[in-house]
Length: 323
Image (tube, rainbow, N blue to C red; front, top):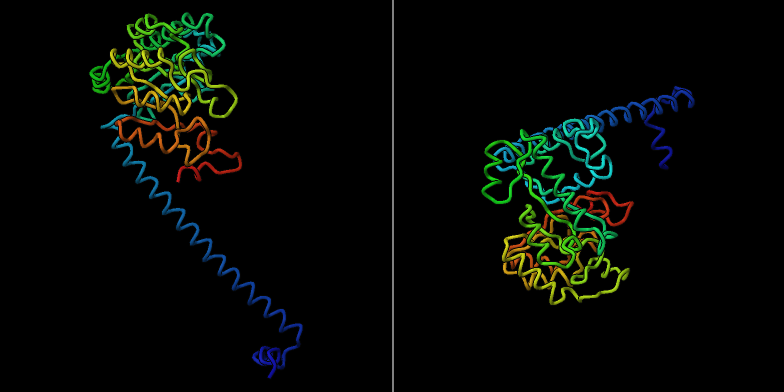
């Protein structure tokens, strides 16, 4: 028999061909529906398992964070308060218990179990060699006023002991990070004054060179290196930060500056908001050879979840860079 004959011979011969075809079609449809039901049930079951598993992980994470609160290395809320409200914290729309068009407000901090927060005192690169010191002082002032206006939530601290005390009181330990070495106006005296006002880390550059340190745009070719990492004065800045007990922050700096600071510093450094270059090739991220230096010196990289730094190409899913 041919294949066609073999197939048709299994059907009742007395039924017209048109009826037989209709029966076959109905059988195939029923099989497809059954298969579809199995597939849908399987999808639903695995989705339910995934949801339950996620809930278990979330419950576990919450339990851990209740005992060990999150310390976030970088938050630009003070800059948003400047650009949105000119630092007028008593503006009804600036109320941090209900502030909506920002990533941060008090309910979100509580929901995220944030126990410690470095608030960024940031001024733009355009203020360099102009009024950058005044503007930096104004941003430190707004951080301190946040603590004064919301004492039930924020506790301004300057030490690890203060952080522990804030944890015990159920408050967000609030510290000042000055984002950009241009804020010291190439003055160790200004650096020391900022320390006395609460600065506990200094980002050596923002997205511009200072007269003593190179920024990350040097690695893209958009700017030229001026200090080949750190100048002799830049190394004295590192030494003074070490002496005072101020963390050195290497986010935003060039690779040469990263290496120079890691070699110069007698204390571990931080990257307050950077990610891994090997996973996502953005020049704001940290290359592997520097990550090895981070490990060797007991330093710390705090991951930045800004899209450009975790997903270098726009079409890529965020998850690809987090695997």
